[in-house]
Image (cartoon, rainbow, N blue to C red; front, side, top):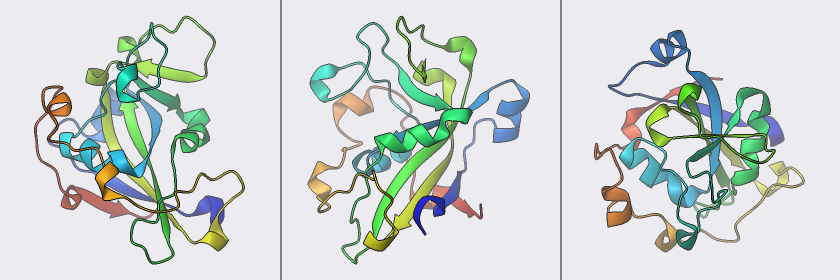
Length: 180
């Protein structure tokens, strides 16, 4: 219960394996997100760059890209999640993506931050970490949605996503649960 109830769902891809990416020097990093964006991310098989403030993206105006936390700061990715009552049964779900990143393709950030910023082309999904909690399991500081509204979910077929990269369709069957 509480802080330790995260489960790893490995991402299966036809691209390089996790081990191949690590052997090539790619580093582990973390990306927290709201439940409303998860299906679109899985559908496209990648994280889109934050670069449009008008679409609700939060980023340094001189540093568009994918915002991540390095492995030693993985807990900070949880600051970008929200527990949502996805199933309406008294449980709340939150997610964090584990990725591998090629830091030679980083975006230079001009102010002090503990976040990494990379181009989308140098970030690969490795796993989706899922936490399922009840009200009793919540930890002080967890952000919690009052209700789940599927109408707020990012539509992966919206032209702003369709024209921004990989069009491979994915389903939850593309994930394999690996015990942590």
